[in-house]
Length: 521
Ligand SMILES: *[C@@H]1O[C@H](CO)[C@@H](O)[C@H](O)[C@H]1NC(C)=O
Ligand SMILES: *[C@@H]1O[C@H](CO)[C@@H](O)[C@H](O)[C@H]1NC(C)=O
Ligand SMILES: *[C@@H]1O[C@H](CO)[C@@H](O)[C@H](O)[C@H]1NC(C)=O
Ligand SMILES: *[C@@H]1O[C@H](CO)[C@@H](O)[C@H](O)[C@H]1NC(C)=O
Ligand SMILES: *[C@@H]1O[C@H](CO)[C@@H](O)[C@H](O)[C@H]1NC(C)=O
Ligand SMILES: *[C@@H]1O[C@H](CO)[C@@H](O)[C@H](O)[C@H]1NC(C)=O
Ligand SMILES: *[C@@H]1O[C@H](CO)[C@@H](O)[C@H](O)[C@H]1NC(C)=O
Ligand SMILES: *[C@@H]1O[C@H](CO)[C@@H](O)[C@H](O)[C@H]1NC(C)=O
Ligand SMILES: *[C@@H]1O[C@H](CO)[C@@H](O)[C@H](O)[C@H]1NC(C)=O
Ligand SMILES: *[C@@H]1O[C@H](CO)[C@@H](O)[C@H](O)[C@H]1NC(C)=O
Ligand SMILES: *[C@@H]1O[C@H](CO)[C@@H](O)[C@H](O)[C@H]1NC(C)=O
Ligand SMILES: *[C@@H]1O[C@H](CO)[C@@H](O)[C@H](O)[C@H]1NC(C)=O
Image (cartoon, rainbow, N blue to C red; front, top):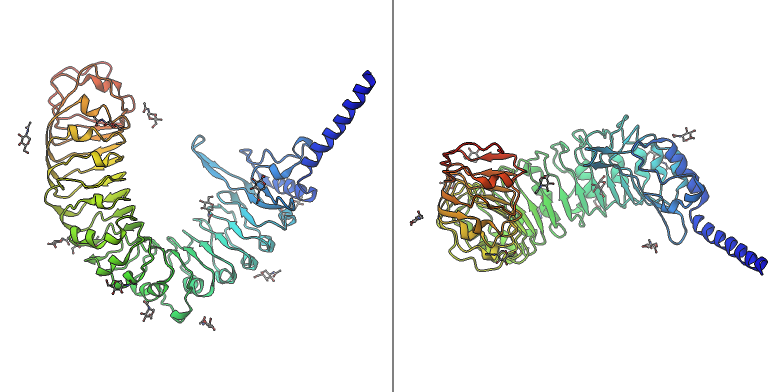
């Protein structure tokens, strides 16, 4: 009897063993050894690769951190070995050292992310990983900062990210050989010597869909290739921070009109008025023309944008009546989420902005808006940020109930009058309130502030406000900044401040306090 039990036990032990072993051997032995050799050449102080172990209990390299295998063939097809920033350590968590050529054993690899590390060099042999479709080399700090032209052999590559402050790209000819490329990022790389790169990219890469060349010192050379050869697929174009004049952008840009959905031209030197031709880009969802020294009005053709999601025109010298501009944007009333017109010369009255029902952010700071705040806000809004600071808006604040989703509300340095307290009560999501330098008066009591449990920034300075708050009040919020200069807080020292343990800025100057500074303070 006991012998039989032992026998059965042994059988189950053996079958149990083979079962676990078959799970363990999912990973192909040759590839497992190649990964271990790769690890050997790397310096891994943070233990990113600690699961990559030759120990018997961790034989299945397919479940090692950052390794992905095909479900069908069990071959390694993905490596995500990117470093990252750790808030806890306040440092880069990264790999360094040499990338061993054992990587070539993984010849089914189609996705390789080694971004945000510090390697000695980009090895030439990466150009032999012919199946690669995704290669991320961004933000790598290299000892030897050259990019090998052998990468031009990766003809299956669809996504390439070379963004980096530390690489040198002397020769860029190879990039236009990547005939399958759809997404290319080369941000922050000095391309001032790459004379025809931009032109080559958008004329020779037939599948290019997304191009990011941010802050690359792009050379100021006009296109020489016929405009008919320009890619008809390019959808996302970001050439911000390059200081290019409009004469080198507009002639080809408006020939991309069938496909473009996002354009970022911010911080170029466009100058002059916005051309009507922008309106031919009727499928645009995102347009950023901020900080490009534009002036004059907004072209009528902006009324063609029916799919607009974000529009950044901030930091220019544009002057337009805000009311007529809002009417022009009517086709985008239900789609636009971000509208930034700050630091311009928009004029007229502040219209009822809640007609833009999808709007999350409205930035109108630093314009020339006059007249009274709209008496009624018609529509329930999804606004998270409303910035009206530095205008000349007057009159009373309306009921803000429809704006109860607001997290940030700024209207400093306007001419708003009347009371504020009860207007704040529905704003239970509010984190930042900037109301200084208006003509607000009346009393703010703890009842007005009880709902503002998320508030961290409160600036009520330079109004005619009186704070009447019980000495034993314990607010739900914990402020970081409190600015109540020239409000009436006194005569006794405001005891509720004792509950605010997170303050970094406090200004209660000129607040009519006539009392001893308490010890706890
Ligand atoms: C492979 O299988 C896992 C687990 O069943 C699944 O989560 C994953 O999506 C599959 N991967 C592919 C590429 O099919
Ligand atoms: C790869 O690793 C092997 C064995 O550790 C070593 O001999 C070889 O020099 C390494 N090659 C590279 C390119 O680092
Ligand atoms: C490349 O990796 C970085 C993080 O290391 C990431 O932010 C970036 O989006 C990646 N690029 C692409 C094109 O996926
Ligand atoms: C890879 O590219 C280099 C340089 O562009 C070239 O000399 C070499 O022949 C290519 N290798 C293969 C296998 O095509
Ligand atoms: C423009 O495209 C045509 C047809 O695709 C091609 O034959 C021609 O070589 C291209 N011209 C240039 C200058 O790239
Ligand atoms: C395309 O470019 C040509 C030459 O610069 C220009 O005449 C034409 O108007 C452009 N097409 C569009 C739709 O802007
Ligand atoms: C706007 O125009 C004024 C006067 O024409 C000029 O002084 C100022 O520099 C311009 N600002 C910008 C941002 O271009
Ligand atoms: C854009 O608007 C202008 C005038 O506002 C109009 O003439 C033009 O046909 C419109 N273009 C498209 C593509 O809708
Ligand atoms: C702003 O627009 C007003 C009215 O059109 C004009 O008087 C003023 O000069 C403009 N200011 C700037 C800085 O362009
Ligand atoms: C406080 O906020 C809640 C939503 O969080 C809201 O229902 C309530 O009406 C607000 N109280 C007042 C007095 O407005
Ligand atoms: C507040 O100011 C308004 C005019 O802006 C005035 O009518 C009202 O009497 C003032 N209220 C208090 C309490 O001072
Ligand atoms: C104080 O600030 C810290 C860091 O900003 C935050 O984590 C914490 O939640 C804050 N405390 C309170 C009571 O809000």
